[in-house]
Image 1 (cartoon, rainbow, N blue to C red):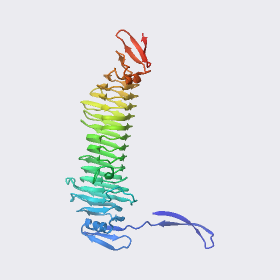
Image 2: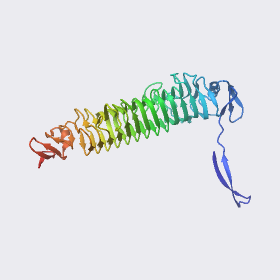
Image 3: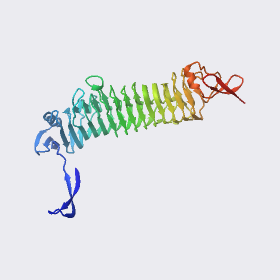
Image 4: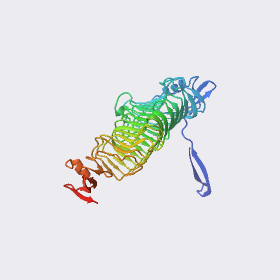
Length: 476
């Protein structure tokens, strides 16, 4: 409601030295839903008359939907406990305001609230489609049960301030849904929290694009927490508490996914899984509760991957913080707390890493159990610099890895300072026993003007490749 003040004047235009408050009442709701005993009624919010009534909530709502087919309609609920026994389907432009009402959908093995629109890329502007302010309870043994589903909403679908308990799937956003907002949604004991997927075809015209999931929370998802399928690109997941799932966040192959500032905990497989795609950003998250055999981040096939400023906390055995399969990007400024691992063989960074910067990370572990900072075979063209590594059993291992630069790292209480093959990699903390073969152009570039320690079997040298010859100074 807009409010303000106006100055008061007499009829001759002289100020009376006083003000008066004014206010503009917003447009009335089209319908007000309320219960009268066992009967659900819909009152026209503009005319004040009862237009629909029935013992079943879905009959009342679907009657309104039929009347307002493809036209905007705003519906508010008087706070109460309602039961929904059948699916309700609205078109683009519906706005449902629950005001804290509880909806019991436990009898449904179907979608409860569906909002649907076009099947192709739209060109005309559309009103906001919205559902907010409900408490929804269900029965997650009914595997087809979905609390809220949006299908082909071309502009601005908003799902906000909803609490869900014991439903099979909380939210599905399917097909061409552009810039959907899921805001302040809280769920407990669900099978799946949010699913984004293609619908009616494959490709961009059949996928939700630019979905924003923020300030949400779930606990105890039986399957996955947030699942991103198809070409559901440019998803943003921000400031959420996500607890307990097989994969807390699962991204099949969508590009441009941004996971920023979340608390992600207690996965049974991986906190974050992401398949082959580009532009993944994982920034400023706390990834904790990594138990036996779990992974913090499992990703592969990525160009321009940013893994920056995160905290990984392990508490089980055989834990891997980051597992990469052809990971390409930046692993920078992260904190890895592995001092409470329970046994087995553990890894901070594992897998095939290419063309990446691994820098300024801080690792604390324990020498009581096997922990590798890097176990990265077949990895090439990486820069590993400025990392602080404390109390690990192993530093770096990587068979058949080439053209990597490892320099200016700080290690303390690391049992074994193993390394990549010295023939093809620049490593500042080892003594070379053969001079690298600089006829290889990549070795030439990697070693040029970088000093190494060299032992020829009789004497120690400081050696530098200047681009034409090795220059050596004998050390005494």
